[in-house]
Length: 64
Ligand code: SF4
Image (cartoon, rainbow, N blue to C red; front, side, top):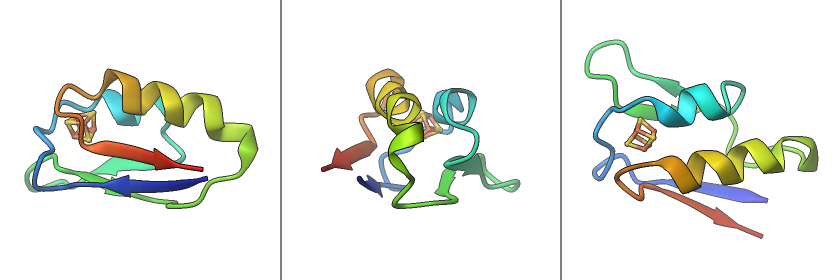
């Protein structure tokens, strides 16, 4: 699994961090999401898929 995060689209809502805190964090200065791990193990796949699904800006793409 590979994750692509488009920070230009991110609206700093934080849903991805709540869904998959091992994979996403937010920058302190503006809340824009950052990737902690762009190729997480299969164990976290469900959480990452959920993060991508709930992102209001469609800023997260999951590649398999
Ligand atoms: S859920 Fe989407 S818009 Fe919200 S912080 Fe994460 S990447 Fe940004």
